Image (cartoon, rainbow, N blue to C red):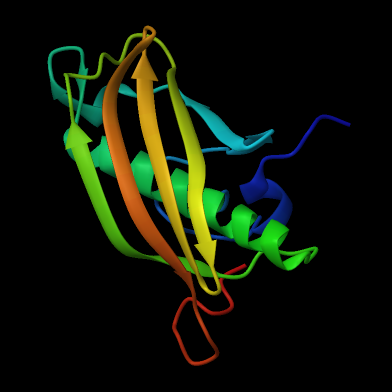
Length: 154
């Protein structure tokens, strides 16, 4: 059996636009743990275009947001020693679009937790295209409690 992504393993019915396996019109990113790094590969489709051959900045942000959120959930799970990740959401997110992101080849996403403090994780992530970093982000992700609309999403 091949390795499952974090999304497929822990949230197969999730319908999030960026990372939900059950959202047929979503980006459906697949994040995999590689040591301290969480990685994903994403091939943009023609409708993700900003201008000829280049990725829309909002799509870049969505990729980084969801990939970072799963990195935070994984980090919190490891920190707590649990078998399932807590439901996490984005509390704060800053994206820097450093260069146009070409769409011809798959994009590589990389994310690492910077700190884990209770229900809060800070993550830094990037998109690489053709070996060049085209976008970076730093975000704060928090585990939600009973009563929050995202509490039982996975």
